[in-house]
Length: 124
Image (cartoon, rainbow, N blue to C red; front, side):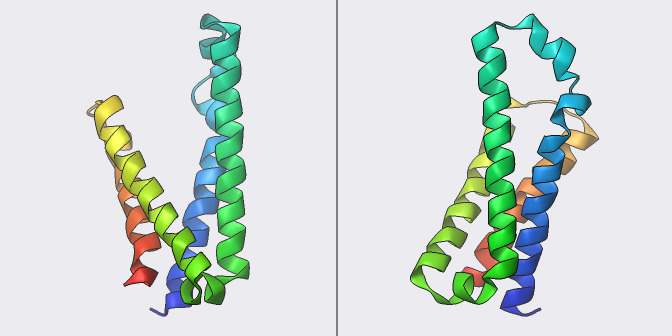
């Protein structure tokens, strides 16, 4: 697969995570679940999730619009490295903080590892 093809897959991965995060309110029943925590915690969780959606959409768009620049410029390569490290860190955090032995959690962990690999691949 070409470098541009891998970067397009990075874009698909990022946009898929944006959509996944957009579904959090329903998936995790935040209307009732977050009502149990204090107002500042509820606000922070929702704000952080909205910012993640923003970042994932932005990265996805950049992957589709500027694949050559991501692969061929120092700034683009730095962004790819930052995203690869983001997914490595997210994988580690998953293993530390979400110790649930469930197939969906394992699938999510695999998706984080996939993201790290996809974003690192054009750097090799």
